[in-house]
Length: 263
Length: 188
Image (cartoon, rainbow over all chains, first blue to last red; front, side):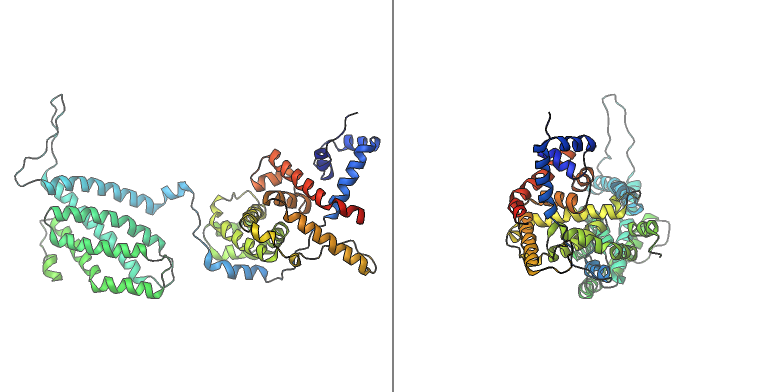
């Protein structure tokens, strides 16, 4: 006769076995298995379900009050992360930025009168270089776009109510810091001092935004805003952006230069 | 928003609507507390587990499949939070006050005599001590099987274990409890 193990009997006690009838029949016939089962069941019956302390009807509300200010940001599925409109826009902007930085690096760092770079393959095919004018326009457009985006972030920060979550603005600012650094270096190389100075101030303010708590207090926001105001940064960014757009379209009548307006 | 329209409430909560999530918290807190209390055996720990579970649930709402039942999903989080908490507070558990354990429901008698009440209290304490000796996983698996009446397959899903590992967690728990409680059988 086959006897059942303790494990079989535990599963039987908890009705986990499909062959319940088989075990029941066996327990009727086998005194040793029946005794083992009685001992097991007797012990498990001692373990009564503990009654949890009663929680009132308002308990759910109490829990909500305790957690409502601690709720984190919801996780976003990876496909949503990549296909969110603002992410796509950022990715697109970065692609343009990289292209512009590449062109700008070649244009600004080239010594006066140096021949335009020509790329030749071993089959003697010669590619036509991008003209200086075209390069300049791409760069001006990219920097002007960068300033527009920065202006929007700074405006959001200037108008954000205290305690509101500014994490999306911070992510945006973080992306812009890297771009700003790149443009500033190019501007320094090209001797565009006023552009480099504005980009330097912009970079510092953007970094401050990035490093502020995402739910900034009124005092923290006030500090950032005071610095932005003190440097007249929004004004400078707006004016420089406009100036670059005008340089981009040389046919249009030019307004006063940035240096003349901000000095 | 009508709280009885669970699908709509859930959909709103998944879109980041805090009002909808508040409704879910209000609706499921008591049951979550009950489960957390049974696994942790301690009121304060159960409170902590409930709060942490809702915070985790909020963060992971995007992972929740709309076809599933929110309560089942939440209880999975509660069980795992409880296991995590027991693990992290193991030392505290070793010195847990048995005063925290609520009276166990016993079959009613017309007039329970003092001797019987004392005996019940003795059993409760012995069970609580024996339960405290289980590993966090054994404790959670046993609680879900013995108190909550969940099947081995459901427990495995809840705790992220295979069927075999789940069975063995329950078997080990039962063996340890038997060893600790066997002497009481003769007394009761």
